[in-house]
Amino acid sequence: TQARVFDPFFSTKAMGRGLGLAAVLGIVRGHKGTLKLRSDFGLGTTIKVLFPSSRSSPVPLEATEPTVGEWCGEGTILVVDDQQTVRSVAKQILERAGFDVLTAEDGVAALEVLEQHANEVRAVLLDMTMPRMGGKETLLELRRRNETVPVILSSGYNQQDATSRIVAQGASAFIQKPYRSRALLDILRGVLDVRDA
Image (cartoon, rainbow, N blue to C red):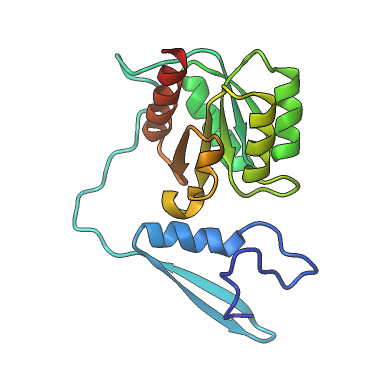
């Protein structure tokens, strides 16, 4: 079990779903860190997250409100992610930038929301790994229904690993989680500028 715990979709339950610790490992490695696993029968499991030390000075937190001259948009963005915290943070970032935000916890719910708000949604922020209907299946079905709405894929994996097989199926851009508000808004501005050109 310890040898396979970081494998995608591995589970000791009847059926593994999602990426779980595989996603955690991808994020940690993306920051040049590592994970240390210790598990003892009857005592439990401990996973330590190790990051390299930094010689640079701390970076101040981003301002909570847009600064003068910062880009603000308009219209409705759909955020699709099975993690409530990710949906909440993305919603706050986008609302501060002037957007209305709809959310969905998986692909099935996302397609229902899109059907109800087909003429309002200007772009979709789509997680790649979700229960019921994941990012790949959602993107294919979304493209079947609407060929023009920009879709930004998000994942804890790096861009090459995460999108090599599905960008060609209609995604407009990719953002790696965790992301900062400026990075999300820069990518969103780019895809909307292309659409509106």
